[in-house]
Each structure stands twice: as C-alpha cells, then as structure tokens.
Length: 220
Image (cartoon, rainbow, N blue to C red; front, side):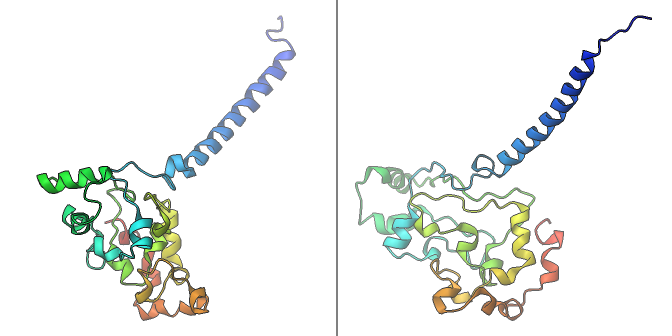
C-alpha cells in the first residue's frame, strides 16, 4: 500500500501541535494581562463626569473634610454622594458664573439631581459597608488611594476579591488609629512608628480575623 503522507508531514504536524500549544499559552497570558491592565480594572483611569470635580482643589487646597460631602460614610453602607444643595452652599457665592459649573446651577434651578458616574462600583453580589471599615480603623486612602492628589477622581485599587482578601487576612497591615481614618496624609512614619506598632488595634477594635475570610462576610 502506498504511503499516504510524506515524511515531511511529521514536521508539519509538530509545527501545528507546538504552534497550537503556544497560541493557547500566549492567548491565556494576553487575557491575564488584559484582566490586570487599566483596560480591565479601570485603575488610574478618570471617568467622564457631569462636572470635572477636583478632589485636589477641594480637599488639599480648600481643606474640606471627606465627611462634609460624604455624610453617611460613618453610619451607612454607602458613603453618600453630595446633593446639589451641598455644592451650592459654596457655589452660590463663589464661581457663580463659571461655565464648568453650569450643570450644578441647572440642577439647583430644576431640582433634578446631578448624575455622577461611579468610580468604585462593586458587583451586585458583593456586600460592602463603609461604616464598618471606617469604624474599625481602615483609612479612606487604603481603598481610594491618594484621592486628595487627584484633579479628576480615579479608581486606585482593582477591588478584585484577591485584593480585598489580602486586607481581611492581614488587617494589622492596614489598620490605623480611628482619629486618623480621614487623614489622607497620615502614615505610621509621621508619628515615628511603623505599621507593626498598631497591630494591637485589631484586637482593641474587636476585629475577629478568623471570621473575616468567611464567604458570608461579603457574599450574602
């Protein structure tokens, strides 16, 4: 019986097999890179907003405390987005004709709330409570980054489950005194200490580490 394939087909078969394996590997690597890149996580990507609000101006330049605008951060699951009335407390007196603030004035005149695009938007199957974290010594900067340096607000962390679990497994690496939670410039070094000097706060604040990694803490 005549040979169906020439000996050269062995080389072709090897090239196809190796090429297929490399394609799967490279495709997986590319997918992982995309997953962790700003395109996948939106980290350090400024979203377009109805008004180009600058935390750098309001927090660093003007000295406005986080809680002035985010009024429920200490008491509720949601930190709160300031109503137009909060904006107009100042902007009925200053920058009253600024073109960029036209949507704020229109909202005030019509009573229609401004529609902001959320920066940190967790999936519906994830439960997160701001008040639990800030009342247990987790600073704003831990999740939101150095927001007081942001001329436009950007997502600072991936908020992937792996990132959250890292904090839940080792809260002593992130905890701080409660009176420093809203101090975006505070670090242990600013008091001549290291993070290890605050590890005792985990027990002092009633944080039970072996319960923090239970699935039901975040998925209810």
